[in-house]
Amino acid sequence: MLAIVDYSMGNLRSVQKAFELLGVTAKIIASPADIRRADKLVLPGVGAFADAIAILESSGQADAIKDFIRAQRPLLGICLGLQLLMEKGYEDGEHAGLGIVPGDCVRFSVDQPPTNLKVPHMGWNSIQPQGNVRLFKGIESGTHYYFVHSYFVRPTDTRHVAARSDYGGEFTAAICRDNVMAVQFHPEKSQAAGRMILKNFADL
Image (tube, rainbow, N blue to C red; front, side, top):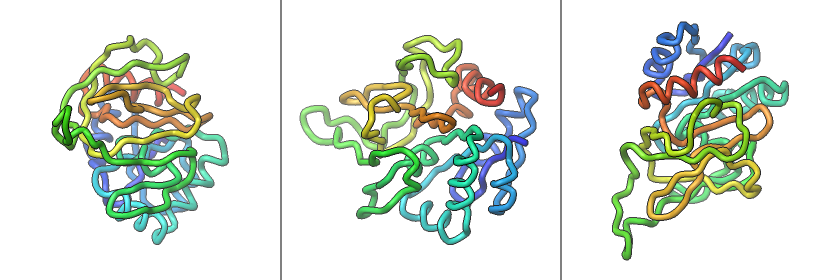
């Protein structure tokens, strides 16, 4: 069973519909027991880091996600779902994340001189996959994906960086650590290129 975690912070239906377009059944689940039973897990998300981690912890979903990962089954994080995998986030203070990937999540500072770029980073941007990551099978460097985010992750170990992008400077667009993969962009909003990401994940 491929499952999408419902913790009241994600655009669940659009992710589910994107999988359905590929002929893949994706079930939306919320209970810790269902999370532990899933074969593949998607952790989507739109919203604030602190609110999201509080919901995951209080609901018991956080522990269930960690158990799922320890069982060596594939997990895909999307946008906030990527950020929550880190050890810390700095949105409205310092908050502990799930601690799956060493590193933190910080705000873009590009709205200051000399760049004066807008935050959030919103719209289409190219990525550069790093190394041989199964999630990016068949995807060329320079392929464009849709981003909406004010924060980005900084993995402590650069070997966990699966793709990079640039917005007033280089930032991590995707990570991979063993069975855990996550992207900062929204594959479900990225047309054919996004569906390739979801298909690669479903095929693992």
